[in-house]
Every structure is written in C-alpha cells, then in structure tokens.
Length: 305
Ligand SMILES: C[S@@+](CC[C@H](N)C(=O)[O-])C[C@H]1O[C@@H](n2cnc3c(N)ncnc32)[C@H](O)[C@@H]1O
Image (cartoon, rainbow, N blue to C red):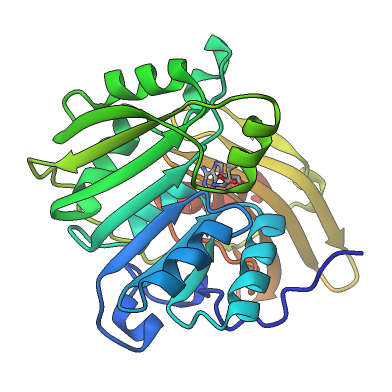
C-alpha cells in the first residue's frame, strides 16, 4: 500500500501563487533560503531542516511519488522549516526564485544519463548552471554529490563560464541518502563532491508572464477539430480532442515545448457571444507563456471555418 503524505501543508501551491514566490510569506518568516534539487524521499532534507532550524529549506522534485514521500517525512518529523515543491528544476529556478534569493543549494545523486545521446537530459548543463548562479546570493554555493566520475567531469566542463568557481573532492559515504545506500550496497566506497561557489553574478531576470488573450472563433467548423502537430521553434501538439455537438463545447489536450518549459494542459472551447471562445481549462495549472498564446492562436486558426 502507498504510504500517505499525511498533510499537504508543506506542499508549496506554486501554480496558485504569483511568481517569483514570496518565500518569506510561504514560510511565514524571514530566514536564509536553501534549495535541495532532486530531494527524492526527503530524508536528507528533513535531517538538514532539523539540524538547522534557522534555515528555510525547500525540497524540489518533479515526481509525485518522491514529493509524497518527502511530505510524509516532513510531517512525521514536524519540520516546519521544510517545504516541498513538485516541479521541474529548470522552471523552478527560472520562475519561482528571484535573482540572488538562495543562500545555498544542494543536489545529491542527480541522474547521470550516461549515454551520449541522453546528454541533453543531464541536469547540470551550462545553461542550468548560469541560471543557478543568478539565483544564488553573493558568495553562496551549491554542493553536488555523484557516484559517477564521468558526471563529475562533465559538470566541471559545464561550469566553465558560469560565474561559479568549481572545486571537487572524493568523499566516503556519509550522506545516507537512498541512492548513496544503493550504490554503497553495490560495493561503491568513493563518491565525488563538487562545490560551486558564486564568484561573478550572471543576470537572469525572472521572465515576465504574458497576459493571455483568449481568441474568439466567429465561425467554428467542428469538423476541423482534430489532433495535430506543429513543429517549429516552439513545438505545439494537440494530442486529443472532444466535442459535444449538442452543447457546442469542446476540449483539447495540448503539449507545448519551450526552452526550459514543457507544459501539458487542456484548452476548452465554449459558446460565447459572437461565436466560440478558446481558453485554458480552469484548474489545469497552465503557466501563461508565449508558447501557450501561440497554441491558442494556432488552434483558433485551425478551427475557423
Ligand atoms: C537519483 S534520484 C536521487 C534522490 C536523492 N537525492 C537521493 O540521493 O536519494 C534523482 C531525483 O531527482 C529527481 N529529478 C530528476 N530530474 C529532475 C528535474 N529536472 N527536476 C526536478 N527533479 C528532478 C528525480 O525525481 C529523483 O527523485
């Protein structure tokens, strides 16, 4: 049976808050803000939160199973200074944290994606490290631990030109995270710790979110409501469609890919004065972006008779 998260109170409802987040309001106090990227089951996060009660600690993971386990641990430990963010690392850093807002960042055992063709999936890319730099306070640092020498070396190369000064050392096990225990159980006794210290600021403002314009389709042709793929600088895909002729209402399942932002969401089509209006379905948690606006316009154009 899946262990319950116990309470959602430590989960940050970031889609409902204005971005970048007001972290002092989220925690209800002013304190140095730290981020653990890929916190997994939250055990390291909770240990640090209990050991450093003066710090506001955010554990980030894109997977609900991990976020759920982290929530459970925070709730069981009563660690009021720890919160969980279920989101993508790229999006989180770019949109939820302002420049120079983090006093520390951690990343333990990021997925190494060792195959060369999977290199674009590796987390600590040059782009990501420049973004991370912009979110770190002056002189602040990020510590990363990996089991792979090749990932360490790749990350060292990525750090060049990021404004972060890199140093590394071998370290014995001692973190006691799930993945450290996993590799230790397979006989690994040496891990690699990379420290990145901010030396020079990289400017990367939080992008402004556009106000979405909902198109009005004056003459709808329901026969044109079908799945499509639009490949260009911003790929837009319509994966599924539903239309109820009796009520004149429709629903489209969309995927939009932008740099550092992949969104899956629904658009709804509703009868309105003068035609049909197309808009993101309430509750689907879409972030307003130029790609979403483009999706709205593409669909409206396709559906117009
Ligand atoms: C190999 S596990 C390590 C977990 C934990 N730090 C440990 O040491 O046991 C990597 C974690 O990072 C999360 N993750 C991977 N890519 C991510 C991304 N782009 N954004 C947020 N979380 C990510 C995964 O869901 C997973 O929980």
